Structures are given as structure tokens and as C-alpha cells.
Length: 232
Ligand SMILES: [Zn+2]
Image (cartoon, rainbow, N blue to C red; front, side):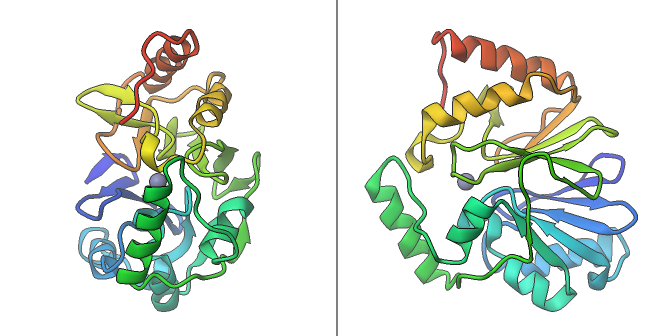
């Protein structure tokens, strides 16, 4: 589904992933494992491009429902994979994925084993302020230590990963049970305040397609005063 010109959301992959159909193809996140075919068929059947036109895979963070097809897509298309260094260590299996609830940590491990997600090394490291393919990288630690967002100042789109979500028109913080540090997550949100964007695209829930930066700023302000901290 094309959300705005050249930016597509691939549904049914859980979590959502986004394809930017510009000069080259760029994929933001890759969904749950075993969905490689679905992503490739979107490239060939909807965009009428070749799998090898996919040049870059950007990972907003290390979770299995975001990195699930990255390795296989790289093998098939030759695309390079980029992530923040702190989550790159988790993706490479050098550090564990930590959550506020130990049970969720165990669940993540089990899920990775069942779905046979093997650790892999990313090709490129993305730090705060880095620009890649016209997107500015924002380091927003909280959901995971190396969670990042990608800001497209030309199209006024923010790809937020799991740092924020939207359900039934209501903006929510990251899901608490699978979040590394909720306080850190809300402090990180302050970085979004100066940005101007119309559209916000997250890993789960609905896209926000109008006045997104105003809605997010209102959410940040409300939560800063401690009135309506929401998480899902
Ligand atoms: Zn996540």
C-alpha cells in the first residue's frame, strides 16, 4: 500500500516494513521470519522492480519481528544491512536482548530458537545524526538501547520503529513488557520536538498521515507532565 508517493507499507508481515521506491529501493525493517517471499513479491509484482534493485536494508532495532528476513534478503538481493551499533551487537548475538520483564527476555530467546533466527553481522553502523539515502538517523534509546528512527525532511515522514505506535487514532509509547527502559524511551522522545513531519510510520498499528509532528508533540507534552502515560 502506497502511503505517500514512493513510500509503501508492506502489510501482513508483522511488524510493518516500509519500502522507499526512490532512485534505489530501500527497505526499513523486514518483519517476522519466513516472510522473505512476500517482501520480494511486493518488489516484483507491485513495484515492477527486480529483487537486486533493493540496495539498503535499514533496521530500526534488533527485535525478531523487525530483523526476521534481513539476512535472507541480503543473501538474495545483495543489499547492505544497517543498524545502530548498540543493537548491532544484539543482532550479532554478542549481547542479550534485555527487557524490563525477565519472562519476556526468555520468550524472545525461545522465539528466536523456534524460528531459527541466527545471529548476523550488519554491514553498516548508523549513529545519531548520520544521513543515509536522504534520511536522518535519530538515536532514541528506550525500547531497545540502539533503537533509531529515520526522518525524511523532504517528504516530511518519520519512520519511528517501536518507539511510538498508534492504535485507534491514539498515540502510544513502546510496549512496556518488551521495552528495555521506559523512562529512557520517554526522555528520548524529546528529540522529536523540533522536527516537522506530516506522516509517522511505526512498526505496529496505523500510520498517522496528517499533522503527525503536532500530534506526537502533544503526546510528549502530556506524558512529560505525567498525566496520561500510555503504553500498550
Ligand atoms: Zn520492538
